[in-house]
Length: 202
Image 1 (cartoon, helix red, strand yellow):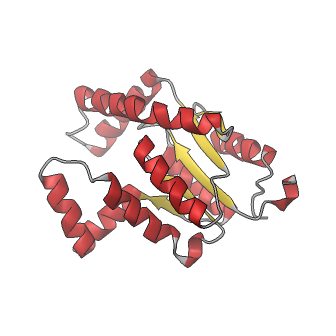
Image 2: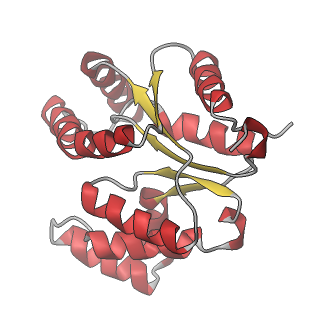
């Protein structure tokens, strides 16, 4: 495929809590004219609206369990089938383990599609901890204790490392230095995607 032949941008953004992937994700999606598909946002919206899905998710979370891969994948498939995702999307928070990678692969293969790039925001653990402590103080989040933050980073490292290696074998991972100003980091992401022939909307 020639560099100019890319008319889609099917992207995944990954990074530890505090890496700024939510902020960068919104910027990237706007630059490429694609929707952000965040499982967390979909769950929260459904819980707030009191939908059937929201009630299911609430019951699972109230029991202290994680939302099962099948249910999460079903929700993502439904979202990616909507019209605004026809020319691409930016996934955030999914897939978060190798089972979900398989689910996503199967769905995209059915449509003759595949991911164009995986944006990995590389942030040292100490930097993530510092940012999350600051956020906890600014937002008064009592659940953001040092222990809770460290636990979430451990889960990320444990669950996400295998996903990254799967995508690295496919040669689609762009490791981006996640330390710097928002603009600097956004420029690094755009430059990496540009090198893959993915052009921002002018």
